[in-house]
Length: 447
Ligand code: PHE
Image (cartoon, rainbow, N blue to C red):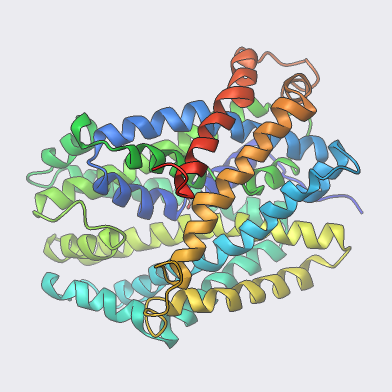
């Protein structure tokens, strides 16, 4: 059977940027930027994205295209009979875990969308929003229901395949997302008192920066660019041999970064204009923004736009998360795609239920001082993703060889790749070293 694949360059870019752009950009980036003092943190983040994230991204695309298979199959093809296939297995496991809790947060977004549409959300008084949010996420049934819907929508698109599912929907959804973001940005920067928010974002104050902030920036670079678990490796396997991978990696990286910054430009001017706290944490978009919309003319309308936008961003990411285990199981065990997708999505749903309950009835059940959700998030984002990135860079730098990787990246030498030697250096030395530091920090070996 011929393997499915992307149909056009634009489709590839929409799907891959769709994977990268997600809750990481619109939900997490603003709140960790807020917690870490703003512009100085963003500068460090940019350095991490371009010097470490981008080379790792190109490496994933290259391994995927060379192997023309799922993460496990691709390593098997490039290094047969070696243990490297376990890097792929780690990626598949990480995808399972990340999707199980990512779908919980995406479910909250869906719950907000349902209330934004009916105008209920905008009617809530600002001082009651904290209780509203806390009440919603601590319920038992409703968040699980929305988590199920998120996974069902994701499975529906994944079942349709790469060209007729992932590519088709990304090509529609990504431009909509960009358009919505621009509208909201204009609204936010024209609020009275917006300039303080822009200053917070763009005028660095290095005294606000901590070692923890620097490491958080690097960890988030991985999460935000969808690296370290084979999502972009899998997408790479659907790309044909003529496409230019280095420029693709650059475009995905720029798109992801721009959207994160744009989300910042939507959120912080509003936060400052209404005298809210930028350091509020994970609730930032769920509490502060509805406050803003409540106060704003046409707030109900902008509120629908905003939460639909986050919902779209989340779905184009969950698709790529689900595609990893689906491609693995269907290819390696020769299972039909539809059946595989339904079974895996359902198992992920089951694993995700305790994550949802971590904000309610299981809130007091902690191991290592963290809830079930807290542990999965910590282990996946701070250990498994960086570990996946580390293994991949060691594989390229020291096993398969940067020469072979560059050969694949330049379409067997037919393409110009001006930064080939910089790429080789970064992936062989800089990326592994930097990642080892985050891992030591995350595991508490250094503090
Ligand atoms: N990059 C996505 C985001 O920012 C999350 C993600 C991580 C998706 C890893 C796929 C793989 O929301």
